[in-house]
Image (cartoon, rainbow, N blue to C red; front, side, top):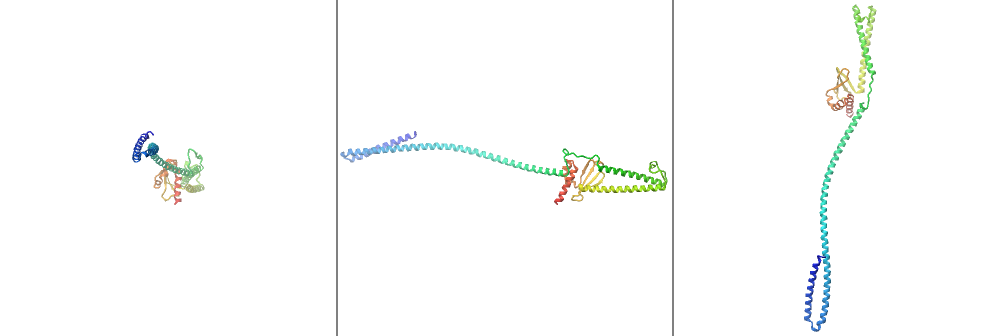
Length: 329
């Protein structure tokens, strides 16, 4: 309203001056045309018309001033609103820039997290595969008879029946051989007509032909018995080897002293064999010798011999490996 007051005053002055000039021109034109008799009523009527026109002009002027004030007020409001909108636009632009920066940072973080998730998934899959592989190996070792020394205790018979039988057979064979040797020596002495030595006196203290013939029969019987024992022993050895071959799947042959060759029944080639060497005649410690076949099974040697130090586990794993190859083939 303060801005509209000077403009309204100028417009009021401009209209008043125009009114005055117009009224003056009209009065002068009428005054020149009218007679003195007609001058007064006509002048009054003109004055009333002029006053009405002035009132109308004042009303129109007031209306125009009101419209101008309203227009100026609306212009001020629009300008203030435009300034507010400009400020809001600046704020929105700054927020948009910050949002774009945060969205860029968020996208980079999302990409980094996605890559990390993919790496963790790959590592989890790898660990799961290794876990399954280890479980399968553990199950295979369990089926092969392997055990954990920290949890399982193996009892060995101090009086093993098989060891006792072997020892007893060996002693009987040795006694029979010694007896045969003494009887042979006695027969040679008696056939030569010589005297019986001191170590043969306990065997024979007689020289009659019947007794000599009897001694020969005893010697022959002892030799026959010894031969039969050898045959039985060889038969038992062969039977024992066949049983070992059937139960373990390996044929064991003695190549040289304290050296043994193992051939699997599931070997792909006839020459595929393993060589073990005993550190002593008792066979307490065995050592695997290198062969062409042993070079092809380095993983089994690394796992069962070098890490686990178990020859039975190694032989069992090799048997399963060779058997699975024939089964798949």
